Length: 400
Image 1: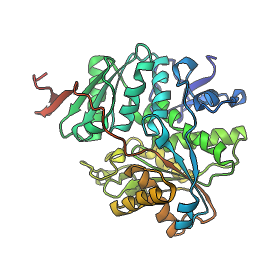
Image 2: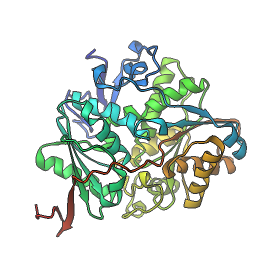
Image 3: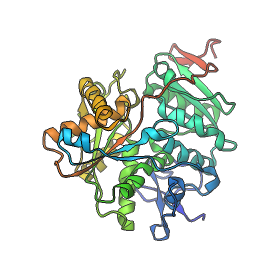
Image 4: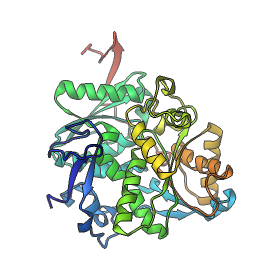
């Protein structure tokens, strides 16, 4: 069991130690879970955490959800006819217990952190990840979390209060600022900086939507489409597509389409310019828009990894404006009966845009990840710590 997977650097191939290593201990590169695919067996179960257990970086099955089922896969025939795509499929991740695909992320990431020796981690979120983390945190023994959220996103973080979670609200902070503060706090307190995209447990959890969909659709998928912030789900999906191809479960890997709202499109702008990295002109200091879950204005550290795999796949980055997003949301509800959030609608709108300009063929098989719904924000705890920025330092009301 201990040889189920190893953590390696994607760049230099250095095998990491057993401790939590979000970046290579030797060169600082991205780390990944590498499985011995010759030993992988897909179990006879409709619980994805059981069926794909050999492809997730968790050793103890008892740390994983016991009663979950695969989320629905919709052959969107009505919507497809409307927009001229006969093989359009929608992965309905709104059916997860917290209403978003980030439930899968947390279900794998938390036990992965725990088994990597983490006792207390610090993270930031615009709402979906932190809600999923807070929901599943009580399942993991001896693991605690400090959460940092910009005040704009406070209402999006829903959970039942528990002693294992401390929530800090940063007044007028962006997601990028909260991310930096979380890392600095971890360093100061001797906790673990979880590091979002660079936590391979997150990416491995998010790839489950792809693993399920390949078997549910049962034929080659030409495009995978998702709205992106850091795009960790797309990265995990592409890795999973290579794993399934090696296993003989699928015959091709998909072209990747990463969608952003036009008001916050740093990766789209950089990619369209042919830039290898994010430059200052691409960064959106204070992102605004209706697709709040994907408003990441500074993806400097993750963009090179995403550009590499999107280019390798033959895919694209694309942005859409607010009216296109709202129209897509209405179309999905009208034609397929699914209520989705604006971030998920951003992905659908991008498919419509690329289909109209001929980039996506009418007969190609397209999988769109409907990453989340418009959640009901009815569990917003009051036991939070408010922080304000004073002379460059974040302090609470007591000046601490």
